[in-house]
Length: 266
Ligand code: SAM
Image (cartoon, rainbow, N blue to C red):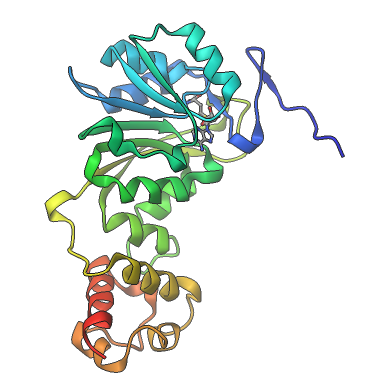
């Protein structure tokens, strides 16, 4: 069956599969760019510039922006709108992009495509060493999960996997009416700053990820049951974590201790 046509915005048919909801409200565009507040010499990198509304605000403050856009039609429009000295365009998939090739201390910004927000945040967390900070707009519920405290319904895998790498702050919310076409959800802007040398040392990141994923796989299970294949009773003891607890009650530091003990104690 043919797909229904998307909504046209400034002559561009918005593509759902690329999560295209364009921020159009000047108030929120300025607020995001002001939250970034680029300083002279900063390398500003925008993910998904779209029609270039936020890009223009960023260029006005930083002088120059590097942007990664997957949609060839939008990239062609952006190349016409901004001169190459103001906008360096990378046409491609941000999920496959190595941000480290752009330098260090990057100021990464984006009104992110909501359909790929979690994998994109994990991809950026893997490259946190190259980032100064990350200012992103996401679905409001996703920001609530990123900033959640233990023992709350929002606390989960996304919380732990991001808070182990970043200090995360919710800045402000943005209503659907600020976008064209309007999304069906509320949005919020968050700032993520890599913890750097303050980040907990993790002996084996892959094992840490497996432990966190299994602990939240079935939230109602005790850790003893949820992690029976991964963490032995002596490892629980070594990490000083009661196996009768549920994953959602563990702090990020306790998850690190448990994953490390799982590797060190048989
Ligand atoms: N920044 C613009 C704004 O605020 O109006 C557009 C935001 S729109 C929510 C998301 C943008 O990300 C779209 O331009 C879309 O084409 C682009 N995009 C989607 N998936 C992408 C990917 N994997 N890599 C790079 N850009 C992507």
